[in-house]
Image (cartoon, rainbow, N blue to C red; front, side, top):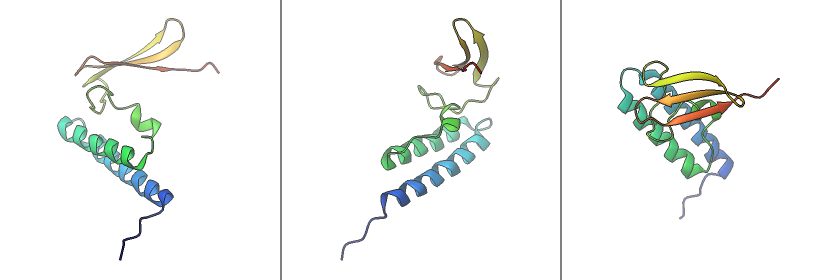
Amino acid sequence: MRRRRAPRAEARKLAQERIDILWEQASDVASQKPPLARQRMASARKIAQKARIKIPRHIGRQLCKKCGIVFVPGQNCRVRLRNNRSRHVTITCLNCGAIRRFYNKKQ
């Protein structure tokens, strides 16, 4: 007999839980063992791609898209507040040199 697959919503919920667990583990060891944290987040990305879900914003903003490390401000990234054309936060990865900008909306 064939094995029944889990419904898509249930599979996505399970994938989200796994991503959260991997994120907690990666953020705990990010300052001591960066390669282990990178490996955990690579696994989380694969799970998200397989389940076709997005990495949550609060997690995605703390990852380098180019090299995959978990940002630890002052240790492997530089954080600056800029006010050139519009207000934004600039995060520069000190490992690979990638720059990420997060724009702030006026309130």
